[in-house]
Length: 329
Image (cartoon, rainbow, N blue to C red):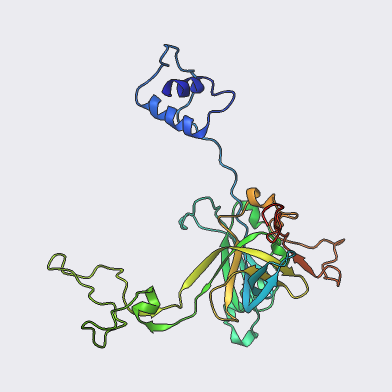
């Protein structure tokens, strides 16, 4: 098997060597083997440290939305889904900046960031610096600000004051939603971690819902950090990944995403392209990929939604889930 792999190394110019064979051949060459088993030398232009170029990572900035609530949803085949309604409330670009050299590096992301403001508050409710910051971008005073790292740097080429609407996304794509989960207060181990509790009898008295012993012996003589015990539950930053965008309401700037979203109704959440299901690999399957870097209406484009085109729906699955093949009924 190794001889076949090394012969493929000698012919690596055309066709390219498969990934598994390439790394195995690198391991053999680095082990000191400099020739093929039949005595044929390895090609001089073969580089064992060569790696295939990775596709350029695309990370657009996201939006700020308010959680409205949950609704039932049926697709074109009549398949039921539970969706969460998110309202993109008065989003504008407030700042485009280049992060300093000592900023925390993030793999695959550029040093450019886009700051988005959402909501509205009265000017006397905001600090003077905050009012001037929003006025510099030509927008009203924003209630919530958030910053998004982008990649590549061209994803930050957007003018200050640009409005961000629900058309920033495309129906059928996947999104990640980040919010603050509902606070539950101090809870026991059964509700907080799913413990089954103590037996109902056999010597258990007044401790049926407790977690029992938590310590060790004399060695180590302590309770390890991170031990699952009773404590404060909820009210934490939570990200729900890979939620399918089922519908976009253009008239009211609403996003309908499958599944649940953390937080109470009315809370702010961040909506952005899914990290694990975004880019050319996934967006090429959509009828209309998301705009880059965002949707900007042109002079010839009528941005107002009409009765005919008021909603955008995700394409239904290619196979009817309720179809019964002949002979299997």
